[in-house]
Length: 488
Ligand code: GLN
Image (tube, rainbow, N blue to C red):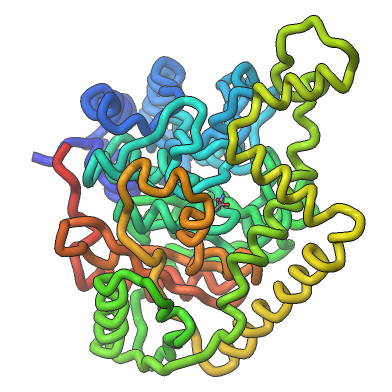
């Protein structure tokens, strides 16, 4: 028998609307599931049980009264712990924000609440979203539900794990260099990073402001389309948000890929890529050819510089964004006595930040410092433009690009913690899109011979989310990979 917690948002919405399920039952089922598996997975920083039950009851009452509600009203959503959700903790997995309860809702949170979605908890992440494994969390790592000895990816590892472990129906994450898509691949869920500016960043704790973007992390493409529809749109609080109408992603989800031209970037066949990932990628291309699309080889010549550029621009922006945590205006203050104010800053920041965050602040400060600015930061910005131009040229001849999500399946916990550069290489297929501001979607593509998830990624031109959903949906219409669940 299907338990309510196993439903997709789409399915749950149908059941809620035809009254075969109440929101209270759905929330109770999800909370029960959390109680069962959370000790193994640790996807959540905090579970918001009482408030969620209260909200569910309210939705049920309103539905009974015949109020007009969003079709998804009453569905639970897990929120990454770097979004401001009023009256709940927002730690960013950092000691420095241990006691921070935001006084306002992020725009996306407000939009979710307006649609009647119910926040069920805040999910674990790498500290300030810096990492690819959630091992950088100050409050303990999240485990990959497919193999508890492995990482779920990062930084939105908690959101991804909560979905595949059926601890929530929907979840949401942020992606600066791959933080939605890489964990989506590692946990075998659907994750989209929309076009830069498609979703407001207001109330998302900033990591690298020119790269950060919020997106859905869900059980399938249809849910991702529906969730993006709820959260997307222009916001006067975020001047980088795009003032374009939001399409009806669900109505446009036909799954028709006939005549579509798919680019296969030759530079993505990198040295050291796991052969099973390469094989899965080729099989995905064959799948689409079988569905009436045409695959052609394309070139994205500046791909090899993306990681270096990402780690210069990303750290530069992070060093500036994180300057606000001084123990005075923002962030936890160390215990005194202090010799002077500089001593107070130093002690608060030394205690409050973990080692990866410190590394990024130092790298970023270095690339921005007088004497090195031109050689590193300015040059990185120039190469960023070349990477963007590569994609623009490619999209003159193809509709979407198909490539792997990650160079390997999920790795073992501890395997890369001593080697930051190795860890950074996890982002080789995801970071280029953030640099170019383009949308990308990752869906479950298959499993390795060891039974570990492998993701495939589709990239499109700016504001082509509808097209990406459509192409990804085709795959899920014809296969059941996204329906498989780990035994926990
Ligand atoms: N793994 C990348 C990093 O460590 C990306 C993080 C992200 O997208 N937030 O920076």
